[in-house]
Image 1: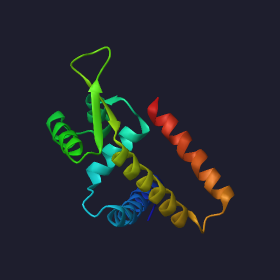
Image 2: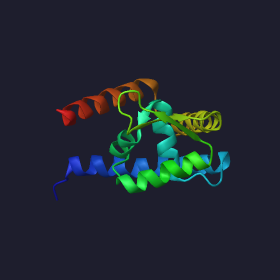
Image 3: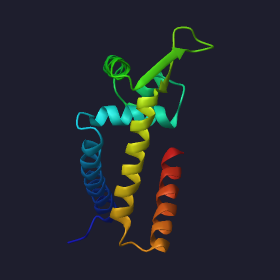
Length: 144
C-alpha cells in the first residue's frame, strides 16, 4: 500500500502542535489558573506587537470582530491591556500591555521557552537547526 508522505508529515506536525498546546496550557494554568487560550493568544500578540489595533488582532486571530471586541473588553477589565487612540485614525484604538499584562506576557513567554526546550531536548542542535530551515522554507513557499 503506497504511503502518503505529505499527509503523514502534516499529521505529525498537527499531533506535535497538540502536545505542545496541552503542555503550554498546563504551564499557563500554573501561572494564572483562569487564563484562557484566547486570552493567551491576544496577550502574546499585543506583547509582540505593542500598539497593534483591534483590527490587527482580528486578522491575527481569524475571529470575528464582535468576539475580539468582547475579548479586548475583558482584558481591559482585568487590567491586562491598556488602549490609546490611534494617532492617524481616531476610530481605532492602539493596544498595549499594562504592567500586569506585561508580567503575564513575560511569564507565558518563559513557559513557552521551557516547554519548547523540554520537547526538543532529545533532538540534537544540528537537527533542530535543519528543522527550522525546512519549516522556514515551507512557510516562504506557502506565502508566495
